Image (cartoon, rainbow, N blue to C red):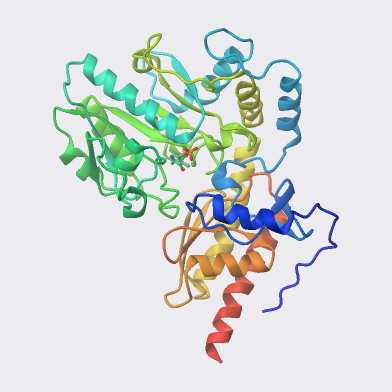
Length: 425
Ligand SMILES: *Cc1c(COP(=O)(O)O)cnc(C)c1O
């Protein structure tokens, strides 16, 4: 396969050889990265230590929704670096309120707020945001006299890597060896509202699910599923919690993925893109009458809601406030899905799923693993990530140029075709 991708090398400092060896030996082996060592990045492009350029079609699993080093986000961070970066929540600072107001305003129309106002809890990572939502739901349950609150979750979920988050995982790789597990979760099939209704009893306080399962391979539930979930939760008087850490903030062509179906959850977790690809910023937004369970001393975080985090978060919300980014993701996303559907028609891949600028692709049986495809694509200058087995996912920056998006899909097609050709020999 000869797809040209060479670009004139720039002079980038080379790491000394012994550094790479020490790196491999001393770094815990919890990742198996592709052999690409990134030195610099701008927008949708990264450059490795030998000056080779790659189109980043993963964008940090949505942490880089605005691309690498977006000028408005860099400007906000740089300005804040010159003022104050960290105070702890022991004192007040002047960035927290503007960020809170802006995030609540951005999401208010997407939340089930009947008779109450939106409220926000700032945290750092996605897992911490989901932990915060779980703690809020449990405490809310306890206050209503539920002694042992349970929460219903979906098979195939991904909510992070903490002990509680892996306790509710159905993925043996993520879960095994980390017991004893946090009790209080019930796992039902994803996309089956009747299974949720059947699993509810007097101990149930909430349903927690991703609107579209990201890590599972961009699994889109059947039409009407989230609307049914909403009414099941309303009938039972329990909370609907959407984990929008990966799906939220423009990825699906709407502010939240739940907006695709006009479904308003009681609590929403946000993360990844909220930090603008610069620092970890996460949050829970939702009904004030639920998040009011947190009183001084009952929950917190040293770094959550820091001045620097709030400056970035506010700049991210500002980028989403006009709806232009979401519209762009919708239009470019339609184009992406059309082009990927052609791969199915041409029998180059088995199945494509997605929404907005987000796609999961199942390879043809026998083509090879998702990892094989990622390696072959990296060789022609495009970076994506496999999930389980023969599935890969695309989540380019929402700011990607239309031509770059086409270039990425062209190279994907060429790699798929070249493997097919070599098999025919
Ligand atoms: C990535 C992710 C998380 C965890 O976020 P971290 O910042 O890695 O802790 C939680 N939920 C969903 C849906 C995610 O995609």
